[in-house]
Length: 393
Image (tube, rainbow, N blue to C red; front, top):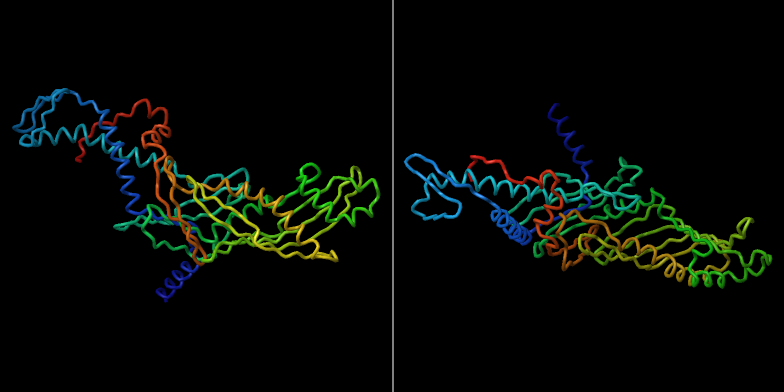
């Protein structure tokens, strides 16, 4: 019975296990690049070493080595030289390597703000898995409203998979990654647009007045020239669908168009519900995942007697008045958990069923020393010499 109970609990825990929203694979090509950059850093560290004159005895070996003369003949590399390495070189190398690793890890964002409304959680879900050719990491990859830091969206998307190894790095994003972003912005009240008067683009103002000319001319002269109001409000969190053919965003929103005469009740010209499909193209620039949106198709529902007459103006309104504002925001991008000073280049996007992958190479935009010095505390910068140690190499 106890065995059955334990098995049941294990199955229950597995059933509720959360899949990662983001995965990153670092291939051997990237590790080789980091190794080369790390060796350059260690060479720079060794150039700063000042070894004092060494005199002493180690067993039957007497040594007297000055700072200016080091004649490392192979026949004399005995325990005395090993003592020199243990006392002077090894601590420096160990210290430099530790500083290098910790400084890089400290620059990786784990849980940070995307903007004034939303943050993102890149916490590791389990220990990284290392193989002979790759290092794979699973991140939660979830957005959240900054006003509700403890809120989380259940992840019911498929688990992204990484199979490729040709590029230095591969990043995979599931539909959950994008759904959590859109739901977070929805909960933060950001998925709405209100334009009144001068805020309405001139071309859009003329288009709407021409579209509703028949209704406007029937109003009193005091209302005809009133400022125009356009309100677009998303009614439910948008949803992302990723297929091999592409990525789409499904949106349901209300559209209200009215005149707002000063000191008088507004006069509604039209109220519609709209189902829209937006195509989304992803790209990596630097360390940012950017999205370009395009209006693919939409349907409108309205009490207006001639829906066909509204279709073309509404499409134009969305294209010239709404899509540029959306793309201005989505093109800023979201930072990928990559150490400071390293950027993505030569990216290739591949869509799969339920997730997409982006393969890219790495480029050191900053040297490791520059990154380390920037992030090193002031008191550490003042004194970076390691404490002598007798630990072996």
